[in-house]
Image (cartoon, rainbow, N blue to C red; front, side, top):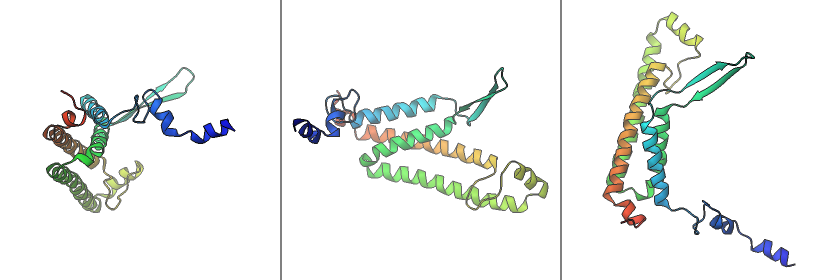
Length: 187
């Protein structure tokens, strides 16, 4: 009977609070400032990597098997890291930061729509031979999508520049509201 009572009193939070590096708010838990600091560290690490498109390294072993090693797109990784940081800081955004970040995100959407609209015109005027070459690569016109590789590269470059501005804005926000001094009680 005592064993059943012990099982009934068991709660997941009890275990999480006592695990090393657990997700509870006990002795070994984490706090939001440390998460924000880690997200900023990830952004900085991603920004220091080579900003190039992802690719695959293919090597043939002595038995004729092809081993593929994917190399991630450094630009997309940085943009994802900044998105995570923005999501962590979303409750702490003041009016200026919200407006600035939202205008930057809107500029990405507007630029993407601009590229997609221009691409429709490109496909309409493209010679038949060029359309055939794209078709052999599996590239076809799609409404509201960027399908031509050069345009996709230009759009990714624009996104990268904009996300660098968003990271700067979030960094200015943290300094403006004295986030780490206030939240973590440092110094």
